[in-house]
Length: 247
Image (cartoon, rainbow, N blue to C red):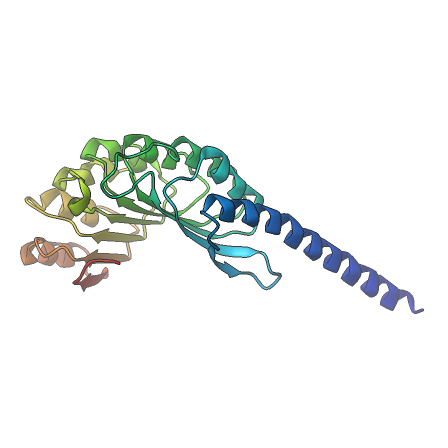
């Protein structure tokens, strides 16, 4: 056999074996996560080699050990965990807060969406994710000062905050004073915010040196004068305004 062909066949066989092993390892991890998910399949997108690329879970009762399992999905890029610690009409359970920090060891995660009973402990844990440049937070149990740790995440290029004032959130316009450390922010999303004095928001937006896109959803109390001030200060900024609450 031609040596070059032999080498190519050997490499192909090795890659096939590696891919097969990866699938087997990931299948075991996903089975554990599905068990934690009440036996329900995960909402998932895969890479070309079959490995997990995106996962979405709507699960309030993940444990710290369950969260650490995601580190074994080494090609995972996007992870969404909704309703963590939150069940409507019941007291919040702080089960997932400390465990989220385990994701700081993940080798490929680029985006994390945290939703549920997101309060002081959860936000402090999220601030440890210095490996993840994109963060989306649906918050229901936080006050302005709780966001101070998020303001230390200087590596963030994207931050989305869904305020959810309909679910016990007590965030005010002073929220933005906690985020002034985000100097690398390129995109910012704010949803369902009730403004009373938009000055701190305008200051926050207009002083982000790299901000390219601002999206505001379902926040009709933001005055037009505030938007005009932003447009004047940052004429190149793309501003997206949409109505209607997120689903």
